[in-house]
Length: 267
Image 1 (spheres, rainbow, N blue to C red):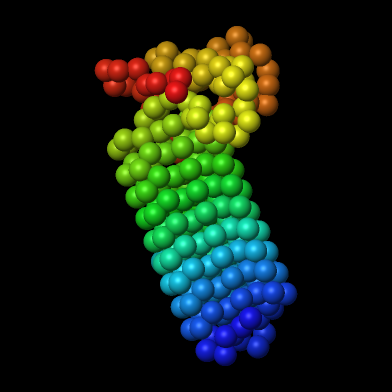
Image 2: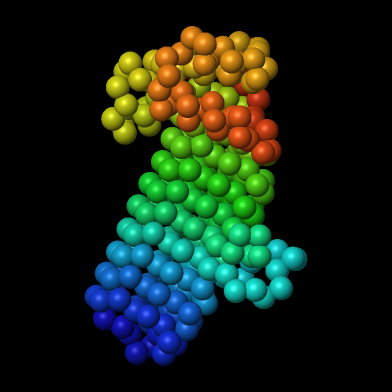
């Protein structure tokens, strides 16, 4: 059902069973997949590709012009995967000449007033809680959860299955599997509850905890910590994911836990 009160450019490609509510705006260089819902006053700008069964709520803006002084009007896109929900007044800017693409994966929830900056990548099954703000060229990997009001500096990376506590300021990369919080963020333990919910066995979680104790609680440098992890932790996809993430970090890794109380590893 498409409301006659909505504006849809004649060049826009609208899939089957798409609902467009009154006063929505859909530009010409737009594709919307089957079964999606576009709420009242939602704005879908040129360069947007939206997957199947997505929900774009009131006041949200997809593929808005990048907030980057280097942007010169170049062609770029914003791509949204299937089954993703973008809540009220969230904004997703399209790419710039840097990458040309901003991408949000499938089965992801972007809550009200969150902002995804130009050239960002947000993976599958992620949650960006209210007022999360991603600077340009941030990478958020699959299954990451960012609490309310989290602010992430441009070029940072958030690893898969990581969880960042609400109100945190992220200026360094956050590796996979862990909880991070405070300003600036520090290691607060392994995201064991999230991992159990996603089917990780107790043995697998214990191995991740052993690895993180070496990397974040031993006082070693990350270089020496990775060497020890590779020596004593059996090779696995989880170990390689963690070590490769740290080894390939461009902004550097957040600090290990330095408080007077040990972070909780078991929950």
